[in-house]
Length: 238
Image (cartoon, rainbow, N blue to C red; front, side, top):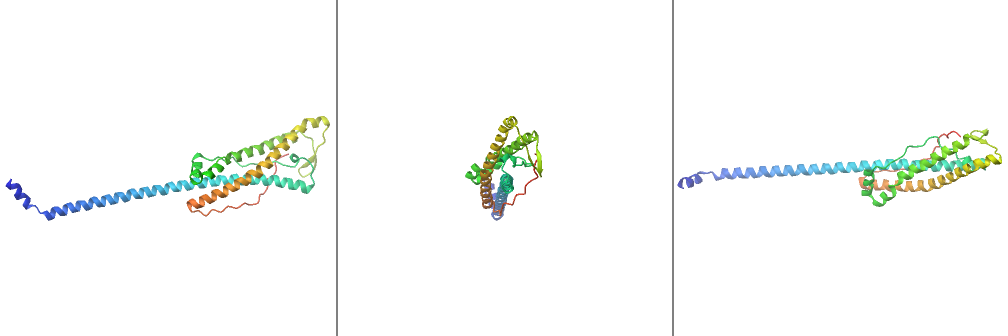
């Protein structure tokens, strides 16, 4: 074993130590670089996730703006019709002066992933906002039903035009027995339209403001929404 002992004594331990130290430094640098790379990847992933959340929130906001705007327009169209009738001294039933709108906006539908994001922001807001696409769409259905039923009724009525879009009709007792229930049904629909638009438009605006505040707080945005005056569309044929 003398040769082994001699070989050991001939090793340059300073060189060996340098090799080991260099290897340790290389391993440490590689570890730090890899850790930083993983940390950067995680950070970028979090940034991407946050951006995806922001986009979903803004998508819901855009849809909620459409809902609130439509409900407000429907409400104001009815209010203006009643105001004109009062100004003109019109004494007829509501269906006789509530002229249907010519065009209606499209339906709105919240996506599940959009509602999930709202639930993360504010659970109570999620509960209140979630069904409002159905509220909006069902109210449009009522207004369109009113337009269809009213046009069907007026199309079968002989009328003497009195200027503009106003006219008058005279009915025999027999004719009145036929059209009277249809007129009463239209007035019932009008009453529902008035009630629904008053309540739903106010609630939609409150929800919209809560959504705006939640998005501003969560994502550091500076959203500021305001109501604008309603300009009535041209009326549908009567």
